[in-house]
Length: 419
Image (tube, rainbow, N blue to C red):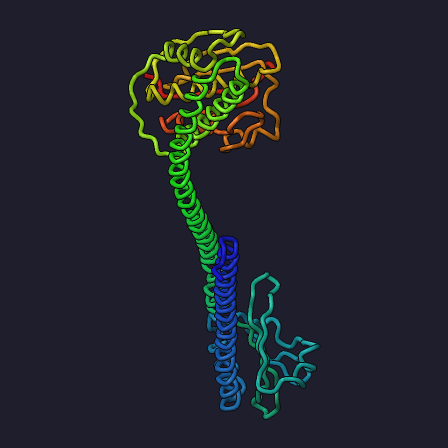
């Protein structure tokens, strides 16, 4: 079974979401792993440095006499990587310190730590100055053969640079994720739009087929109706006025006229129009439209300023205006009222306003005003406004129908390019 448009959208969105989540997780996980590796590398680098310094210090202590050993230790511990270093005996008494003023002091907890130290243990600490450092404690053999404790506190600048570079990757990852999700959203919009376009094209194709069928059907109905109408007219002419059949023929002719009007509207709405635009004076065209639309209608026409020229197809604009004026007239069937007609200039356009004093447009009708075959009139075809909109927009104009802002009634507004 072929999935419909909604199913396609759901499938595409689910697929895009899965891919985005997968790549996001993979990117975050890989970056986290890299960060952890960088941190471990930094720790290992510090530990290796500390082990090398500790081994050198122990060699010096065991291979050299005490006084010479202390002097050599000072040379070794003067390395810039060392923040400070000290050696204590098993009881925590300082027998060597890079700061000589602290010699002979005691570190109470170092004796307890000595019991836990095996091959050397390091950790990150914060000095009293607020600077990060790396503390490394290990056992070492003293010149007298006893075991002491060596504490090395190293500067961590190089290790911090390694970790900092790894941290900067998170900024790149965030930027990539933002770009990735933005592209995902854009792709989602693109695919949804493509599906909507496919649906719209399919609908237009169906409407085109319906329009062709309607056109063929309307022509066939018109041909058959012409024969019926001609025969009834012939019989009506031959029938005496006193014959009871005369009224029946009249009703048949009214019905055929109505069907003929409906068929004509269907043909107008369904066929493709060709427009020949020219400069047209609006005043005579409006007066002709009123004459053809209203005929002997007894109510008033309120003419305001109706000057100006427009770029339009005269025949098609005439048909659109006739439909709009008839719509205004029919809106006042149950009320005494006036049709108000005026034109105004708006930028490079001429605006034609046709207002009525009817009841106005209800909210439930407003959304369906230009829908073909929708009508609130008992005898309407529902194509008048739809045809008017089609013709006006075909000439590059705009048609709107709304309630009058200051009075009761509705106003139809036609906006066309002024000439």
